Image (cartoon, rainbow, N blue to C red):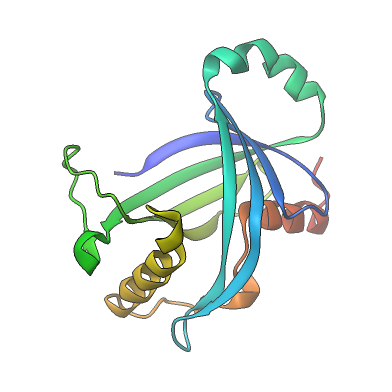
Amino acid sequence: MPEVRQDEYLVFPHCQSVGVKLRAGRKFEIKALASPPQRLVVNTEVAGFTDQWTKWSFDSLWLQALQADLHQSGQWVSVAKRRYLRELSADGGQIVEITSDPTIVPAMGCNVELTVVEVGTHSAPWLTVGFEAFGPHARLSQTLEQTVENFFRSQQPPPIPLTQYSSMSYPAWLARFISASDFE
């Protein structure tokens, strides 16, 4: 079953290294690019970039006091999301999908997310595919690469090639979307 939510992003025109988001009206998040994108090629149908981000998250108690001020501080874009999530464990050296059992908490692995996104009423739906590795910092890149390669090896080829030209972070995608449209 997909998770459905509405997020709001603060627009930083031409900025691809910082993202500011109100997550479903309950959390305020800031993400900053911690390392430049690195190219990852899985096969002729799947290639893209990996990057590392630092995230700061603040809960709703803090947010309630600032929400009105935040909305006056710049242009915000509403993004509707329908998220399909899978959690993969890399514990034990093999990539294994975790069931919905909440008692299983892997120390190392990767979250995989397919999301249908719609920006306001200004566009047709977009699809995003994201992988978020977790675990010991020294193993994040290795875990991510191993998971991505395993995921795409075990699936049918994607219906369209996933190329480096369409591989970008949310801040990069929003900057491109905003600059390509007459979004107000």
